[in-house]
Image (tube, rainbow, N blue to C red; front, side, top):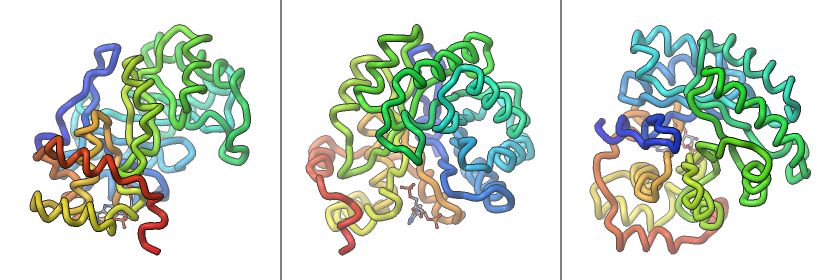
Length: 277
Ligand code: A2P
């Protein structure tokens, strides 16, 4: 239980619990409400959602109903990826606050550098405009930290060149076999914390034989090895599950992977989607 509540200190001094509970693809309503309730019950104090997940309302309700003081829970939400203007970004943020029924969030980030329907499109100008809205929200105290998600080095360089506040985080897909060395090195240099979404490679990593063997060696499960790997690499994993037993399992992270074993895991370079075939 200890590690899941330990914190990283972001570049602005804000503390963020090292492991968060992800919400992607969990529909609004009972499923989202119950899984957040269980995550909080089993020790998570960092909940990650997004306007695009359409479950902010249930997430907010589960947090309120937990009776855990609001300032003990780190809440992230995200600006939808197609919103690339200043005014629309401000408006979308207010809508998220309303859905969550909160007067601030701990972290607000741009969900992607391009609309999901136009992946790879150059939205450099729009990203700067949207990020400037995030800066205003931050300065107004409505988000304790701000950042981006799915940003490449080029996307980050654009933000750094044209805005004032260096993003506090970059949330990217990060798991054993996909440790994103280029963007990770860049982020470390600029003191941007990496948040690791899909730390289990959406489940595929759990059938990788090297990971299974490593789990046996540590008397842990493959999922715990995958999540702990992210922490030992200095990133904040955001595992997600809708099953209580797995939520409990994924919160038990009080061990460390030795340096030489991290190197073994670092050497895995397979595309996880091929591990099962
Ligand atoms: P479920 O919600 O049915 O538990 P990622 O976080 O990499 O995106 O992976 C999420 C996927 O991994 C989900 O399909 C989730 O399914 C599954 N999952 C989460 N935790 C575990 C676990 N401890 N063991 C096995 N599968 C898990």
